[in-house]
Length: 552
Image (tube, rainbow, N blue to C red):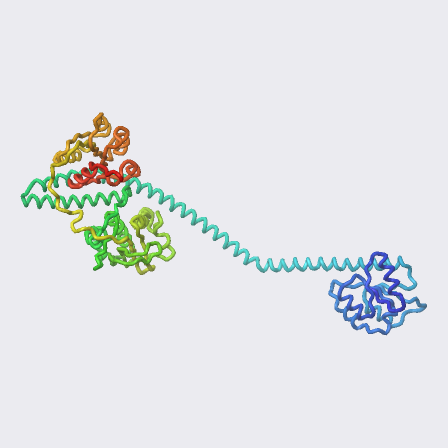
């Protein structure tokens, strides 16, 4: 900045400094200089006479307001004089502060050197300011660091604690999964054992029920008929037990039929009392609308029993277990619109915590201690309901009990006496040759005797190899084969028979399992489930020997 108010001094000095590479701004008064300094600059060159009697208040104010790091350099071009400066001139120099006095006349190089020195001093001041700012910033950061150190330590400690808790949860989850796997393997082994036991029981019950059937058909003595009926009823209950064992082993598919829900609940009364124990009071509320639903009766009984056992475990000090039936319209998003038969199992126990409700139907999830529960009960209930075309819902509040509702599609009631019809007398009108293959001598003998009484020509074999050998070149009109046999099971026998006689009708008698392999060789119409009665055998044989209807 140039403040030279006499003649052409400002223009001459500006031209000189501009040639030296400096940028100059000419000011017209001390206040104008103050305004230019406020904008910014490196140094100010002032002629002494420009200050004179001029108003310097603005310039003095700007100089006084400089920050601590700033000491703006001034160059004063003084008029050469013979004596000392007067007091006013000295006060002017003192007011400028950082000032270099050059007496005129002055050489251009001297002036340029003085300007360069002043600019260098100003740059050093700016550098000092920058470093000072950095130090202040570092100091502020250090203060903030010290102020937040404790909180950051606490936050980091919390993060480490959370990570450690997460790790411990993962370890616990892995241990739980490992224990669940061991438990699952144990249950699978128990299931296989149970299925094998059920198979043997079904063979025994086939013989028992069949021969009791024979006795009822061949005698008219009232006392003997009554005893045979009582024995048959006991055998039927035993057959139901074997179906439950097979359901436990999870080896048979659902057989959906119309089921009277009220009758089902009433029929389970004795089983419930024995299973639940005396500490829990059982209440039954049956719907007056008499709801029927499509379900597998044995599997549905198992589902209700699972829910009842869970309810009992939720009431260690006793309580009330309520079994209720109802006919309701769909209220669940997973169900199609319409009416459903509903079975409710409610308790007054501990209830289910809200955060666990979404997990209770997951396989292997259980809140019981290891070894006390498999985590499969509720998932099995859910699976049975979904396979039946319905679902399971829960209404619970922690500490106030739980209510599970099994929703099943409504069904038309079965005709009165369906499934318990009076046994028709044996007819001797059967025609055709039948081969029976079964490794159980008593079962095989019962089937052979029944078929012979029905008028069929029957041959028999005790295993698959013998049966295949007896086919020869003239196969029979029908093959009845057991599923579970040593050496070669029924499915393998059927596969080999198909190679020799692809159009031969076949009935697979099974008291064990509906495996995927069975579906590949026979449909549901070709299955005869053990234990069976004479009427069931007669019906299955007639349907199998019925010639196929040709399509138009």
